[in-house]
Image (cartoon, rainbow, N blue to C red):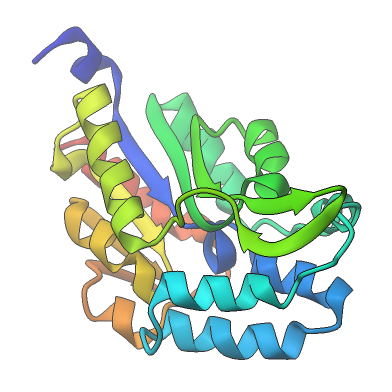
Length: 220
């Protein structure tokens, strides 16, 4: 075992919308465009696995065309971390874990909170914005289930963390691949498509319930 492998207790990798946060970021933005109901319908279908995630994301972002960029600052002020998740991150970091967020949401909204929370890595989508307004398009590659799985694999290799000491958390269908790849896959208030592949199902109010599973993983 190398020095880096000994120093890293484990890798905790989490989805953001409806996992690290109680909300769906794109729905918060959609509020400002008056299209939340339409966006919610597409989000729900995608999380159930009924729609391709990339296609559904493009459809949702298209509804935001013309919205002023200034709404992003307003959205950042109302973000609500899931109860217990900041304490979970604090404990994990104190015990030597690497903590990453992988999100079908957006860097422009979650990066500031992630930095304040001590998160080591964030991968998310980006809105295309020109002349201070949303174009209705996503800028760059879309972060879907395959991208989440690749990120898990890359971080595991970088920090030399075996699968047994990787914990992945999520709630929707696009989290399936990363939960399968982790030694411990945790489904939090999850859709049926994710529950069927999870090692642990949490339906309580607090994500701090995941802490014993991190401790068990670190001991492997």
